[in-house]
Image (cartoon, rainbow, N blue to C red; front, side):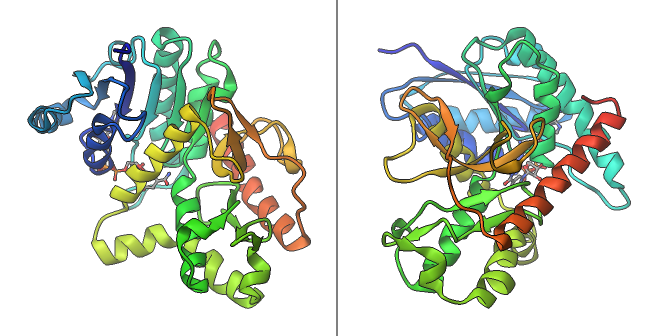
Length: 329
Ligand code: NAX
């Protein structure tokens, strides 16, 4: 049998963790033949709750789960890890300004970046789900100078999946008919879900929809504000769908994307599509079977898309400026 892959999850006692861990351990992340060792990081007051989650993992008797280690010390928990899912973050609470939010998360992601830099395996891949995800990923990356920058990604796969579902529903087709959807920019209300380069049944998706007012006034805001709609309906934020997207991003990054399609991944910009280097922005990406991703090149960007992408990227540049001024990167 193969050696276990060591998978770190932070915020493991939280609501996303409660869905994520069981699916990783059951084989949905790396397939039915790959043993997994889980390394779970939490803050000290949440360790008791995390012990309860580990009891439930034990009670599943997952054949692929070779070991579970928990702790509140990142340099111990991240030791030798191959994949890291950084889910735990400080949520915005009442009265908190944006600067307070960025500082609170800055403290978390500087420390975790440094710990990964010191002890992670050479093939480490890091995916940040905790918000503000793109900028948290940038902070972790900036504090891990010995890890190649491109190993730090942020999650926009949930937005990608939401957009696929919305357009499939509008056209009355199965989600499997929707391909080449792209989320551009920041995982925030400014994100831009692009139908002009997407396909439905092999035909251009925007043309198939044939309703620009719907795209602008319905589709884009519905995708961008879906998180708030879930909170309004459920009383708490998206958890199972966020866990699903976190697994799908890491699965595809490790094992490759299917022929004839791409996925949305927030990755360090190489300057493609006029997005400045130095921010972590969502792009259309393909991944080779060896687990190396590339940004899809040569897509045409119309004026409508250009303005939307520029607005979201400007927000990322602004967030970068704020965390630079706070001394976090
Ligand atoms: P919860 O509050 O349920 O869980 C977060 C957990 O992180 C808590 O158990 C907390 O103790 C832990 N934590 C806090 N600081 C930590 C640290 N320094 N080290 C380790 N653990 C730490 O939140 P949950 O609903 O699970 O959401 C987690 C994060 O995902 C939030 O930041 C949330 O905003 C973000 N989301 C991101 C999404 C995306 O698409 N990128 C969508 C879903 C979600 O909103």
